[in-house]
Image 1 (cartoon, rainbow, N blue to C red):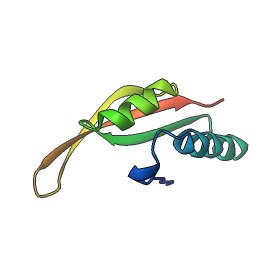
Image 2: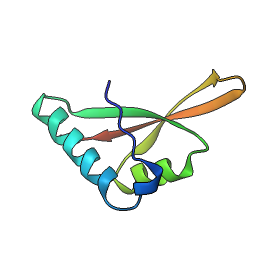
Image 3: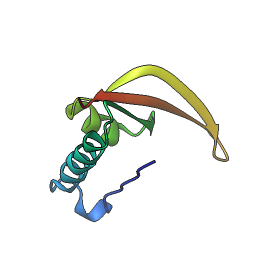
Amino acid sequence: MLTFLIDPDHVRRGHGSRLLNATVDYLRDDGYHTIVTWVFADNYAVLGFLESAGWGADGAERVIDMGRTVRMIRLATDIS
Protein backbone atom coordinates (compact mmCIF):
# COMPACT_ATOMS: atom_id res chain seq x y z
CA MET A 1 0.00 0.00 0.00
CA LEU A 2 1.23 3.48 -0.87
CA THR A 3 -0.06 6.65 0.71
CA PHE A 4 0.81 10.23 -0.02
CA LEU A 5 -0.57 13.48 1.32
CA ILE A 6 0.09 17.07 0.40
CA ASP A 7 0.36 19.67 3.14
CA PRO A 8 -2.77 21.85 2.86
CA ASP A 9 -0.55 24.95 2.71
CA HIS A 10 1.08 23.58 -0.47
CA VAL A 11 -1.85 22.34 -2.55
CA ARG A 12 -2.47 23.40 -6.16
CA ARG A 13 1.25 23.76 -6.89
CA GLY A 14 1.73 20.53 -8.84
CA HIS A 15 3.14 18.48 -5.98
CA GLY A 16 0.26 15.99 -6.04
CA SER A 17 0.54 15.48 -9.78
CA ARG A 18 4.28 14.88 -9.55
CA LEU A 19 3.85 12.40 -6.69
CA LEU A 20 1.02 10.60 -8.49
CA ASN A 21 3.03 10.37 -11.73
CA ALA A 22 6.09 9.05 -9.86
CA THR A 23 3.91 6.47 -8.10
CA VAL A 24 2.41 5.32 -11.40
CA ASP A 25 5.88 5.03 -12.96
CA TYR A 26 7.12 3.01 -9.98
CA LEU A 27 4.13 0.62 -10.06
CA ARG A 28 4.26 0.25 -13.85
CA ASP A 29 7.98 -0.64 -13.62
CA ASP A 30 7.02 -3.30 -11.04
CA GLY A 31 4.55 -4.85 -13.50
CA TYR A 32 1.23 -3.46 -12.29
CA HIS A 33 -1.45 -2.72 -14.88
CA THR A 34 -4.31 -1.45 -12.75
CA ILE A 35 -4.22 0.45 -9.49
CA VAL A 36 -7.00 1.31 -7.07
CA THR A 37 -7.49 3.67 -4.16
CA TRP A 38 -10.22 4.36 -1.63
CA VAL A 39 -11.44 7.94 -1.20
CA PHE A 40 -13.89 9.48 1.25
CA ALA A 41 -17.05 10.06 -0.79
CA ASP A 42 -17.34 13.64 0.43
CA ASN A 43 -13.71 14.58 -0.32
CA TYR A 44 -14.53 16.42 -3.52
CA ALA A 45 -11.05 17.91 -3.88
CA VAL A 46 -9.34 14.50 -3.98
CA LEU A 47 -12.09 13.00 -6.14
CA GLY A 48 -11.77 15.84 -8.64
CA PHE A 49 -7.98 15.59 -8.67
CA LEU A 50 -7.99 11.85 -9.32
CA GLU A 51 -10.80 12.01 -11.87
CA SER A 52 -8.89 14.70 -13.79
CA ALA A 53 -5.91 12.31 -13.80
CA GLY A 54 -7.97 9.55 -15.42
CA TRP A 55 -9.23 7.64 -12.39
CA GLY A 56 -12.85 6.55 -12.18
CA ALA A 57 -15.21 4.94 -9.70
CA ASP A 58 -15.46 1.20 -10.26
CA GLY A 59 -18.72 0.77 -8.34
CA ALA A 60 -17.25 -0.54 -5.07
CA GLU A 61 -18.24 1.27 -1.89
CA ARG A 62 -17.72 0.71 1.81
CA VAL A 63 -18.88 2.31 5.00
CA ILE A 64 -16.52 2.63 7.93
CA ASP A 65 -17.10 3.73 11.50
CA MET A 66 -14.88 6.66 12.49
CA GLY A 67 -17.02 7.67 15.43
CA ARG A 68 -19.61 8.41 12.77
CA THR A 69 -20.49 6.54 9.61
CA VAL A 70 -18.26 7.51 6.68
CA ARG A 71 -18.80 6.34 3.09
CA MET A 72 -15.83 5.60 0.85
CA ILE A 73 -15.72 4.85 -2.86
CA ARG A 74 -13.07 2.96 -4.78
CA LEU A 75 -11.42 4.53 -7.81
CA ALA A 76 -9.32 2.66 -10.35
CA THR A 77 -7.11 3.45 -13.32
CA ASP A 78 -5.30 1.48 -16.01
CA ILE A 79 -1.58 2.25 -16.09
CA SER A 80 -0.48 -0.21 -18.78
